[in-house]
Image (cartoon, rainbow, N blue to C red; front, top):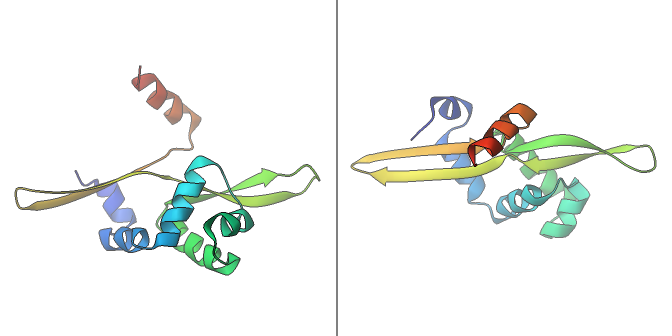
Length: 119
């Protein structure tokens, strides 16, 4: 079912356009496993860092990727990216098209509630 809050945040055409891009999909897959920097994504996805940043900007606007800070052993830090997309569902049934986006939550309380619900 289409969620009103999701529809207000991002349009279906935007999500479909993003997911139509092979490199966007590879970024989402890679960042669903572990937080990665733009340089790490560039190496893993096989595209330039500037292309990574352009796609990250579009994904961030759609709230499908989140920026985080990762401390390094040398005392500095770097920006890494994490996929927030958990599930995208499009349903066409009985003359209606509905869609939904499930995003991963960063809230520890929400994560614990979700884990508890699985038991």
